[in-house]
Structure formats: C-alpha cells, structure tokens
Image (cartoon, rainbow, N blue to C red; front, side):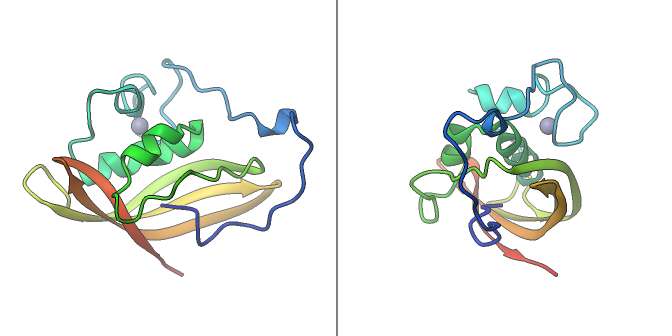
Length: 153
Ligand SMILES: [Zn+2]
C-alpha cells in the first residue's frame, strides 16, 4: 500500500487547517487495523518498536494503521530500500475507514516473501472510496518490509 498510484487529486489547503490533523488514536483505542485489540497491544507495539511484525499480514495491518496515525518513520522503515520513497505524502483530505484482509500467501515466519490482498476503505473529501490491492512483502535485515503492490479492480 503506497498510495502513490491511486492518489486523488489534491486541492489547495490553508496552512494550519484543523482538517490536516490525523485522527486521535491512543494506546487504548480500538486498533485501526480491525483486529479485536487495542492499538497499544496491536499495531502500536510495532510502531513504537523494537518489536517487529512476525508475518506479512501483521506488517500489512501495521502499515495500514501507520497510514491512519500518519507514522511516517514507521512506514519508511518498513518499506523495502529498493522501492522506498524519500517521504510519505499524506493526503490531509483522506480518512482511512477500515481494512479487510482478503487473502494471504506465504509471509509467515518460515518464508522470505509473501503477498497480502486487501481492501482498505477511505473517504476523500467526504466521498467514500476503496483501495483494492495485492501487496508484495519481502525481508530486509530479517524483518518484513513492503516491496510493491498491484491495484485490483
Ligand atoms: Zn492492529
């Protein structure tokens, strides 16, 4: 999930607009990734480190949550060096609204690669949308990282 290919058109926005703030997610909030756990016990423990996601699916979930809370350092360090952008371009008008994992292949503790197919719902300037992608994951220095993905219908 990179948001780079499916980025909606941008609109000018005054600096300091309250609408640019990410949603408030605390350690006790339900985890944005949808698993029945708090953010602190789920994706938050990977964001704060040093724990790393043990499977490609958990990395995918934690990266989705990182987009929700706009944790740029986490997104960059869980991005394969070969495809990692210089920075993450968060769209202030975009609100992530839910993640559904459809299918996974490989990506366990016993694999070096894996794929995760998912649907991520969002609203952009109030209009609902959905990102449907098959993401590829690999390992960098032993930890799962996002490599790239294909957009599906
Ligand atoms: Zn989570």
